[in-house]
Length: 391
Ligand code: NAD
Ligand code: MG
Image (tube, rainbow, N blue to C red):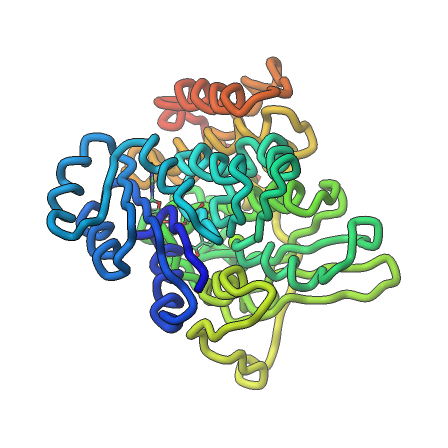
C-alpha cells in the first residue's frame, strides 16, 4: 500500500489522480489533500478517501472546512502553512498539482524533506528551477515528471544519460488557434481560447496552450528536469497529440513516448513507477487515427514561444519574470480585463523592464521576491499593452 499526498486535489490533475486511485483501492491510500478555495469539493474528497489531513489555501476558509469535516475525525487547516503541512504529511509520493506559483512553496517543502514528487506544477521549475533542482539533489528527493510531454520523454529516455542524448523534442497540439491568422488570435475571446481541441485541463494551462506559452514553460521545465541545454530542445506542432515527446540519441536512434491524450496515462505512470498499473485510459488505436502530422511552430503568430526561449537563453530571473507576468496577464484575460493578444505583449514588456536588473538569486525567498515584484509591476499594465505591428 502506497500513501499519497495530493496538492491540488480538486483540480483537473487532482481529479484524474483520484479516478486512478478509485480503480486501485488495494494499492493506494491518500493521507493528505490540499486545495485553494473549493471547500465543498475538498471536504468531499477528504471524506470519500478518509484522509488524515485536509488543507485549504485560502486562510479565511479554515472555519468552513472544519465545519464541513465535523464529526469525521479528519484534521484540517487553512492558509499556506497548512498546505505545507499537507505536503509534509508522511507519504510515499506527493502529487504536486497546485496551479501557478501558489504551488512553489508547498512543493519545495516536500523536496526539502526528501519526498518523492510527481510534478505537474511546471510553474515551480519556471519560477525557481535552478534552486528547486539543487535542493532535490541535496536531499535526494526524486522528481518524477507528470506533465505529459516530460513524462513521455522520461519514458523514452530509459536509463540513458545526458551525454548520450543529441536532442529532445516536446510536441504541442497547436491549441485552438493553430490555423488562425495573427489578427484573429489577437482578438480571440475567452470561450474560444478555452476550447482546447484535444485536452481537458484547468483554465490557466488551457489559456497557456492557446497562446503556446505552455510549450514555452515546458521548454524551461525540460531544461531543469533533464539537464539538457536550451539549444538541444525542440518543439514540434503535432495536432493529433499522440506522440508527446521524443528523444534523439547521438547514434541517430529516436525513441518516442506515445499515448492517447489522457492525463491518466502519465499520472498512472508516476503513481506506479517502476511498475505499471491500469489507468482507465482507452487503448491507442493507430489504425483508427491513421496519420500523424508534424509541423514547425510559427513564432510570429505565437510570440509566447519566442519569449520563453529568450528568457531561457538569458537565464537568471528572466524565466521567473516570464512566468509571473504571464500568470497575471492570463488571470486578467480570464476575468475579461484584457485581450488575448495583450498576454504575450505584457510578458514581453516585463521581460524588457526586468532585463536591466537580471540576477541569480541564491535562496528560494529571493526568487519568490522577484516573482512578487514582477506581479506588482504587471498588474494594470496588461490593459494598456500596445498591439504588435501588423505582419
Ligand atoms: P486546475 O485549475 O484544474 O486545479 C488547480 C488546483 O490547485 C485546484 O485543486 C486548486 O484548488 C488548487 N489550488 C489553487 N490555488 C491553491 C493554493 N493557493 N493552495 C492550494 N491549492 C491551490 O489546474 P490543473 O489543470 O489541474 O493544473 C495543475 C498544474 O498541473 C498546473 O501547474 C498545470 O500547468 C499542470 N498541468 C496540468 C495538466 C492538465 O491536463 N490539467 C497537464 C500538464 C500539467
Ligand atoms: Mg504538457
